[in-house]
Image 1 (spheres, one colour):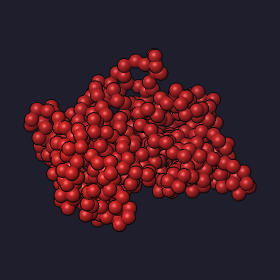
Image 2 (tube, helix red, strand yellow):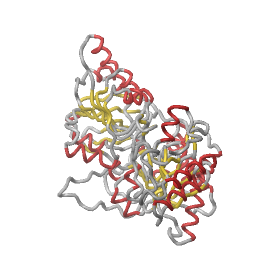
Image 3 (cartoon, rainbow, N blue to C red):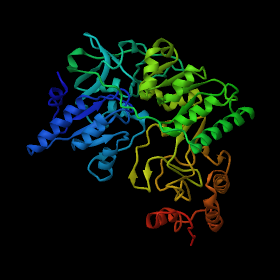
Image 4 (cartoon, rainbow, N blue to C red):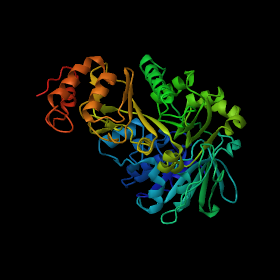
Length: 490
């Protein structure tokens, strides 16, 4: 059937699981049909909202269309769409943030209620119910198993030759959970397809729609310097014997800084060829694979721009031997992160002087995107690294503050902070030593004296030199004057 017919299959109050992890592999046609049906129902005075579960963020044709149609009741676990973000921050959509490694099992445990319908993008589906996914896996295997009904988006923009790129494996529920037999990044342990009862497939909607991946911003000097600083740190730790000489598998977050950082690592002659065990495989990783700088990449999503995806598809046999796409409960699994010795590199919104990290909220209350998988990796990494520019808003916001306005990753999980100014190694340091290290190495020069004065003013207050009266004074001043500069501590 077409997408409009499919949209009419949904009912108010249903919980719907969609394929996709970032715009890669996200359902594209059926959500548009649901949005159109929602508008019809609203115009007729009837309620219509669904609960939306995906692997992570999606494209505008899913999150954007449904948000603009006011068709979402609650949403989890991660999003990046402007219209959806606005609805969340205005209280029109209920949103709860989850660690991505936990989502599939929480669905299986019944914590999120029953999944009524799964909408899954595929490049192939057989008569006996074997589904070959496209550019992501995410939580699609669990959605297919748990949902009462399945709708397939058969997307001709992705070749059937993707068969063999995926490694589909689901964990058992406690108390029957077994060891996950992944001991090397390139190990494959599952099936190339998702297998379902074909009787559950109630519709197939044919599409020919590319992934709605966004272009990456040009690398500027700040992001380039952050990348060089991370590379220098890794080389230094290898020379000191704290990292094995062949490096360890790397995880990198999503976005412009992460993409630029991976390019910097690939260009550093002292960084040996390395492997990736991450959520997302981005443009820079594909380029490094082609150059032999990344020898293998494991992820749950191939999130690349259209020209890079064409490059992969034109050389599919080459890349199939060098990458694998897994369910996110494997790509982000805490036990595998610890076992493989992953070095995690993620992006912060702000960092406080003691090493606590905010990666989700602006000024404490406005949701940006969500925690994603950063917590899965950070808490369990061999070394956990967070990067950010030292300032934003033309220097009027310092990303290094006395106390983060929202806490996602606490000081016990964060090892290294990197900005364009340098590297703060927090390992083996007490709170005051951490504060001085972060300020002197990572804060923007125009904020260092101000932040050092904060530490000095509270140096006798206890184990942590904090002041409840002053901890958020930089944030409060920005809200009043649009600048954090020139704060005077009480």
